[in-house]
Image (cartoon, rainbow, N blue to C red; front, side, top):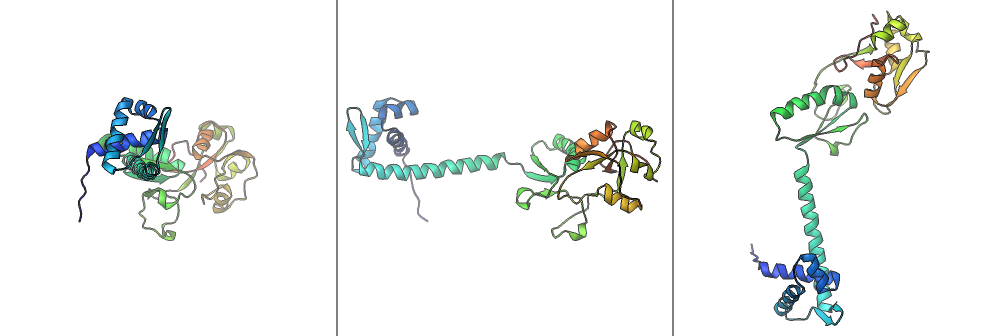
Length: 255
C-alpha cells in the first residue's frame, strides 16, 4: 500500500488559492480568511512556483484565473464539497440516537416515556429517540417497534411485552349523568370515536359486535389523536375504548 505525505503549507496555499479564485480577489479572500492580501498573494505565488505554472492573471482591479488555475479550482471545489459532505455525515452520525423506538401515541405517552425517564436516570450516556405514530412507520426509520396486534401474523422477530384487554373508559361524572351501569346503557350515551386510519384498532362497532349488541346509535365526539380522546373522556365528553393497563381514567362497568 502506497503512503502519501502532505505538506501543511501546501494545504494552506490551496485554501488561499480557492478563496481567491472563488472571489476573484485577493483582498476579499484575505478578509474571508482573516489574513492580509499580501499573505494571500504570497501563498498563491508559492503554489504557482511549486506547480511551475501561472494560476492567475493579475490586473489592476483584480485577478483572473488562467486555464490551469480554472482546472485546479474545479478540482478543489469537488474535493472541498466531498470533505464538507463527509464532515456533515459524521456530525449527523454523532448526534443520532443509539436506538430509535417506534410506538403509537398511547404507548409512547402512557407506557414508554415514563419508562424511558427512569432508564435515562440510570443510563444518561445512552440516547434513545422515539418516532410516535399511530400508523406503520417504515422499518428503515427505527430499531425497535412496539405494535398492537397478532404476533402470529408478524414476519419479523417479535417478543410479547404484555397482553391487554379493551375496556370502556369514562369519568365518574359521565357515568352518573348517563346512569351507566351495564353495556347496553352506552348505546344511548355520547361516545368518543377515534378516527385513526390504517391502525386496525378495535372501534365501537367491533366492540358492540363482540358484546352481542347492536351498533351504537348515539352521536359522539370524533378525534384522530388517542391522547386527546382520553382527555375528552376525562372531561366527561363521552366514553372511549381503551387498553386496561395503559389507561388510568375511570372505567365504566359493562358486565
